[in-house]
Image 1 (tube, rainbow, N blue to C red):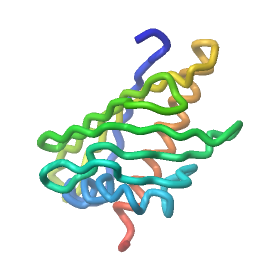
Image 2: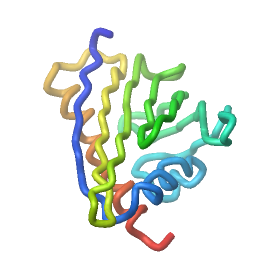
Image 3: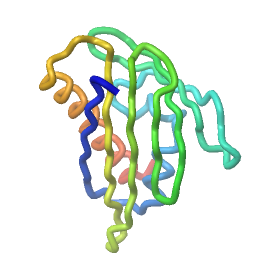
Image 4: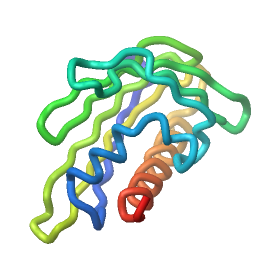
Length: 146
């Protein structure tokens, strides 16, 4: 899809893959700890009660935006696609690997087309900022006692 440039980053999280997955699946708590997330609402669940379609309302600095993402789950993976909303497109995924030392190697791949005419370097910077903040927030939450 034109305008969608995905980027990936891997970090080490000092928590088990199971704990990291629990954090990622707790959509209802995102507004408490995820930067710029104002509201989440699980619209549909899969047969295992995991969020399948989730509405997000986020502070995108220049304005609030609302969109729905669809989630698909595999062994140690979450694939995320765009359904509808104020953006043009979003594609993302999380990959969790046991690091053999009680932690997790968490890879986040993210790309969004916000529907505005942005220069390539601006779109890349915006996506990198979103990706870095999400990884930092997930790491912090997974490593906390909450």
